[in-house]
Amino acid sequence: MTIFGLLNINKPSGPTSHDIVARVRRGARIKKVGHAGTLDPMATGVLVLCLGPATRLSEYVMDSPKTYRARVRLGVETDTYDAEGEIVAQSGDPVDQDVARAALDAFRGDIQQVPPMYSAIKQGGKKLYELARAGQEVERPARAVTIHRLDLIVWEPPFADLEIGCSPGTYIRSLAHDWGQALGVGAHLAALERSASGSFTVADAVIWDTLAAAFEAGTWSDHLLPPDLALADAPAVHLSAEDAEHVRHGRLIPAGDQAGDLARGYGPGGQFIAVLERRGASWKPGKVFAV
Image (cartoon, rainbow, N blue to C red):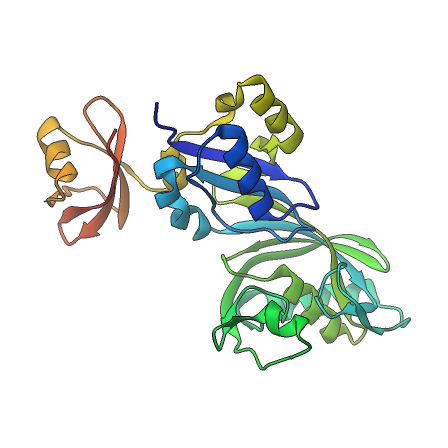
């Protein structure tokens, strides 16, 4: 039987996203496994893995909005912008809660964000963290990101908890660092949980220890989710046998009055067979799955 689905894992702190992928490959005995959006080793929370043909759907999960809960340590700045880095500056100056909350206004909406040196972004053919480990710091072009929601929810100086809703590609480490700079005391990210990635939430995620035990018991597939959840917000198009055949052969089909730029295409038996892409008044088969 072909494994074709998703796993929503509550990643523990410590292992990298690639570590979790490797463990799932071994546990599920399948080579084709990929993650839909990495988390730093320190971070916890939603890590969506795509198995089998579902690896072709990872971009839709990666492109979805994210929600985080971040604990920020004020008064201490590190080179990595998080708790795993070396301390580069400290300040004992007190910060007023109202001032701290007001300073968040500058980070809401569409903003330009400079990624941290310790990141996997490539510049000049090398990843930034490789340059950083070699003792080099280079200018990084700012990138456009959107902060949909940014709330101060816990104030326990020198720690503060933020709840953040943002576009994909946002660096929460940079947000913590930049907030500290704005307050004049420095700051770094002390802890991070991704509480949602698109429609996948940490409340629905399987705890890693539970999944590891399920691998041992041979029941891990009980946690496998349908692949079409990668496009949960896209409309469903139920195809006739004729249109399903057209889709399987890459031909355009009429879109009718169905709205949206993307849709989930289902065959006559209710099986998910394709991602459909808008082309004027037609649907063009994008990714087609042999099921």
